[in-house]
Structures are given as structure tokens and as C-alpha cells.
Length: 379
Image (cartoon, rainbow, N blue to C red; front, side, top):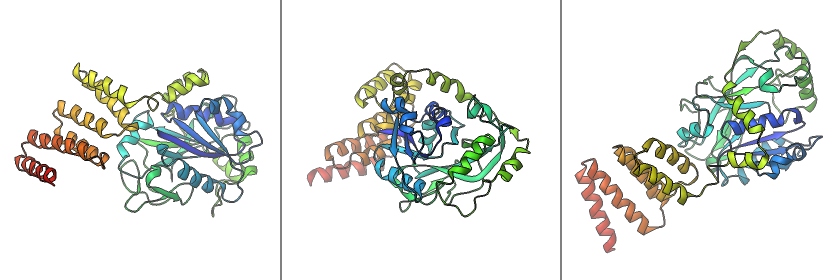
């Protein structure tokens, strides 16, 4: 199972596709699902090497009626059990995890929520009339400001359907939040972007913009503001503000671009491909040697992909070794839930919880749990 993947729909985006894909691998995403909505040069041909290496899944999707929302719904249904998180974005949008340069580390802080909303940072044309040879991120470096619209990174298990390209409907009691954990129930909200944002290269060059107008919209909207040449010329008169937030990702992207596809796949999926038993043994060894910092970092990666009772109990014990008993108790609670259906394992976890109460000197709770176990054993 993957932890963080991307879903997008593309039509005639050939010049920008590889840069976009490699950027997101450099930001920590592990797989990309691309729906090809009738590209003249098929996406399967443009990214044939990455698809063959298992990094990209390309789905031929010649749907004419609401193709974007149809693709999103299909991806939610078919990837529900294949990735913990799915980001639904466009090819002119680049996700930037700002607080931590690995999106997986950021998403771990929002696992209690069904979705995380990230705001657009709009970029202008920077005076380009023709498509520059150096690519998108190196050519458009002046922002026009943070926008109220969001794009969503969601947990498919709690996500019912797309309502728009920007926001989704969620299971009862579940919802999407912004980076400050404030609920975002619609396609827009007040702009915040200290931890994550999406660089939206909406205009690019005049050549790109005219091609975008000819392609049309993948989703019908009531207000198509910004999609005429007059709008393009209007933004071109704005000077914008220099923005280098994407710069830290460029060296990693450049390094990834040099790797053969199979080696690239090994790097991108190195954590989700490893088995839990080997990782648990390695983490235990690090903890026993006293290297708790490395043990906890490695445990965080293990838990992304293998939140099994054994892994969660291991994490609890790591926190006990650091005298973080409350955090250990929380993980034991998660382990108990994960062990549902295994009475023997649940009993063992209950015993661990009892010992935890003893560490916290909560004698009454420890005794109550002991009596509960004794009663359960008799029945």
C-alpha cells in the first residue's frame, strides 16, 4: 500500500508532464494516477518508461461529459485501499510541503482528518510570449498572490465523492481542514500557506495560455474568469513578487531525472516496498543501542504503511523508553483497535495498558483493568 499518491486528468499536456511528475516524486509522493482525456500524443507514450517502471498508472479516459469529476470518482473507488492519501490536482499545479519538504511527514500530522486543503499561489507569465525551454518552475518565478481557492488531499477511506475539482463530500463525522485544522467545507476559504500550498502556474506563456483556451475546461464552471486573452494581458502588466519557495525541491528533482526508471522507482517507493518484520527488527536494534532519534524516525515511516498491532505496540514501547507514557498509552489504544477480532492479542495489549497505568501511578485504573481481564477469562 502507498501512503501518498496523486490523481490528475490530462489533455495535451506533453511539454510539462515529466517535470510535473518528477517534482512530485521529489516532494515525497510515491505514485501518480493519470487519466488521459484524449491527448493527441497519448500520455501512455509520453511517460511510457515511468509507466513500465510502475511509477505512473495511465488510464485512457475519453469521457466528454464532466471528465474531471468522473475521473476523480473512478480513482476514489479504485484506489480506496491502495493509498492512504490521494491529492487531486491539475498538471499546472505543483504541491509544495513548506514546513517539511516531504509531504508524507506533513500528512502524518493530519491523519485524524478526512482531507487537507491547500491554497493556490498564483503565478503569472513573467513576460513570456513563447513557451520557455527551461521548464515551468524555472521560468515563472513571480507570484501574483495567495488565492482563496483550495485543492484537496484526501483519505479515500473517508471520502465519498468529488463535489467540484476543489472539494469533496466525506463520510458522516469526517471533514477536511486547512493547515491550522480549521474545517474547509467548500471550494474556497481564507488563505493560509505556512505549511503547504499549491503553486498554480495558471498563465504560463501566451502560447501555453492560448493552447489552454483551445482545450477548454475539464469541468464546467459558472464563472470562467481569467480565461480570455484580455485576462492574460491584464495579468502580464502586473509585476508580481519574486518567489523561490520551490527552489529547495529543484536539486532533488534534477537528481531524480538522471536515474534510469527502475532505479527511480526503487528510490521513490523505498519505504512502502519494505516488509514490516525487517523494519521492526531494525528499529528494535536501534532502540537497544540507544539511538532513539533514528529509531523514532524509522518507526514513523513504518507506521505509514504498516499500522499493525505489533508495529503500534513497538511504537508505544519506544515512547515508554523516552518516559512519554501518555503517548505510549495512545498508541496502545490504536493497537487494541487494530487487533479487533484477535482475543489473545487484545488480552496481551490490555495487559500492556495495565502496566502503562502502573507507570502513570493510576492504581485504580490498573486494578479495574485487571479485574476486567479476570472476568473476561472466566467467561
